[in-house]
Length: 527
Image (cartoon, rainbow, N blue to C red; front, side, top):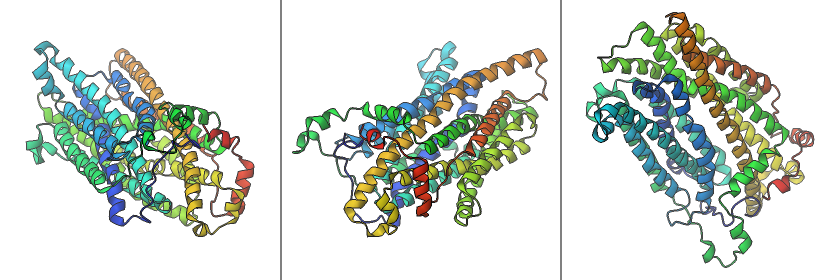
């Protein structure tokens, strides 16, 4: 490994810029990935509960998310970096992971039918639940593999001048897919497309498979990758290069980086840790909360399977409005920053505070309409979560990588091609380190939320048993959301310590670098 990057990494420099069609076809894969995630977020918990899973165990099922994010994403990144197949480095993993995604979705949709064919009558219910849980774990791991490969491909293909544009298109398509996904989940799919299945979850999974396959196929068949040369085929390779490209180097690199984070990045990661302690309860249990409120007003009829679908569609409709607001605010808020009405630091603090106020009020909400309105408002905060932290990371990386000559040279376009490549390599080194550490601060809260949510469910269940299960008492899910609100308040306070720098102000950059030097940068980047 040379300079922290695996040797002989192929960069496609044949094209100056990507056309609009090339940009869309490259980033379309992220729409398919996001649409598939909406199936799990909108229907995962209610579906498992309908199969007989105890509510306190649902939190442990969602350990699949942090496990897959912590293990699969860095591992797939390292393996794809060394892939020497003629198809390229990223596309083989997209296609292989995509196959497992489709198999997982089929298993989730037809878990009951598979159990009826493979298990004895007394064990069919337990078998169906086991198949669904295993399928959700497989879906998380395989979808994370596809997502990691798609993001790497989006970094590989565009030239440096189009990196920001490519990632912006990926975000737009992801948000649009989220809106379409929640809208699809809200509709009565069984009535509209009865030939795809007799339940809402079956039809939704079949639609998701179709969308996923189409989007992934467009990206894979329209993007050409330069195959990575095998070490044995190179005339200039050395034994040191071969010995330094082990699969575990990625984990060593991230672990070393955790111990040497610059202060501004550490502050941002601290905010993210507590913010995601609040967000994960919302992501996993918001639809369940709305459904619980619906069923309190409309008691569930066990003889009518459509009753369950009505309750889950109420939750999906709330998330649909939430997604629409997220898309709109994602357009308006950046405009406010460009016009200097607000800073990113202020927007970050206000968005977390808004989220905290909403989730702290959930135990006292009794009507589905009120819950829907609150989830819709949180769409503003969600648009900031997907944007500001990554904007700040890019800001820190850019400033930390600038040397004295680059600060004084404001005409970046006059640099030679070689200088641009050196800048890109240096930035990618820092970006990989920062994003790897940032992912850890996002992943670890999921483990904590899984355990804390399970404990809250048990405590509320014990309290309801002793209180006689009063109808006016808050649902157990509401108290999990309340916990998320408290963590959001901590994140709000920490966000006031975030550091922001204007990359267009050379004097501001010099002051930032003197105030927050990157210690031992050369040592960190040479792992």
